[in-house]
Image (cartoon, rainbow, N blue to C red; front, side, top):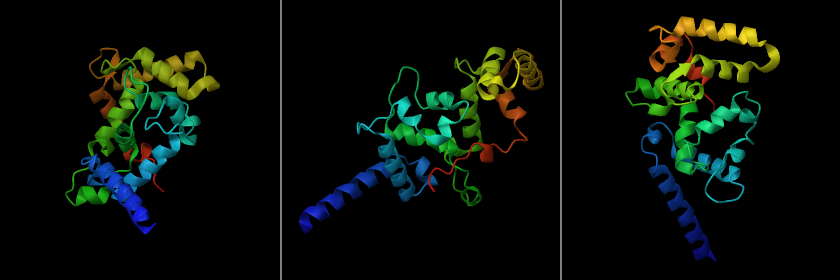
Length: 201
């Protein structure tokens, strides 16, 4: 019995080491314990125990279920044409929501690109840029505002908000917002705070 128990513990340890080694960049500032807990969260969401998550699995998360753009966030986990998500991809996407570790940044250790301010902004930008052409069009901005504000404002008010946002952010006057313009328009916003979720408590 003791040998069998030791063997199972060894197998679990090997699995956990493999999980950790899958993410050398992300793991710069994420502990082995955090990766293991993420794997446990993944397995909890994987009701069918297939090793893959589907959009409906993620929609059961309360933070996404009540988010007005939850569908867009869930879609961002799945590249075009892909209907399932493995653990490696799950961790890479969640890294965008990891709070920036100021101590690691000061100590000279590089931040994981996804959890940096630029990484967070790129992820936010793609939630608006639905056709993936590298620009947020007036129509895309209007659709995002409609999803976020719903019936609380009229169509005319939504159009006015979208128009004002385009005018303020569109520096090259091409009637769309590029990523650089998007980043400049949010310079005074604490993006690290706004896009951080402590999913490992």
